[in-house]
Image (cartoon, rainbow, N blue to C red; front, side):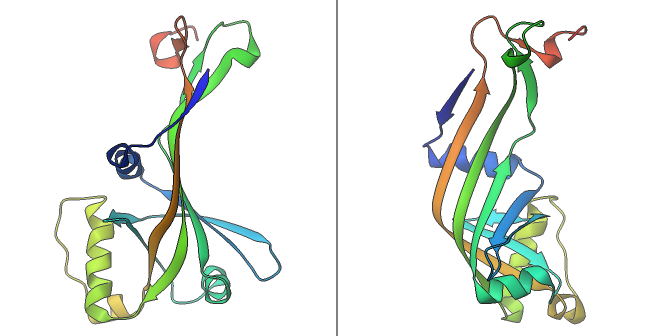
Length: 167
């Protein structure tokens, strides 16, 4: 099995757009890691997230806005040989983005961000009540560093879980 770097921007964006969740990782003032699964939106090199107005993540990011956001496509179990445990692998693509969180406070910008998030999940248009917009914390992450990988790529002779009923 092989791991390859993904360099093409359009392929990186395809991986991001294929995901239903991302994982947002941060570190508190004592260096303790904290990772959350989150809904997201992506547009023009910016990841949009939303949360409650307060909580552990908000306290952490107010002190240290650095964040790592990770995406991974649905993995597929593959193998070279049914009797060799170390020949089993997960095949997927991942993108790891680093940046800093900026909390958006402007009402109309928050609405735009919420629409970007919702467009990731549905083609429906939405309107938001004033309390709904005011009560949500919108996070904007300008991607500063990105790395992407394709891993578990099958060698000739590998069999996909989907290909074999007796797998």
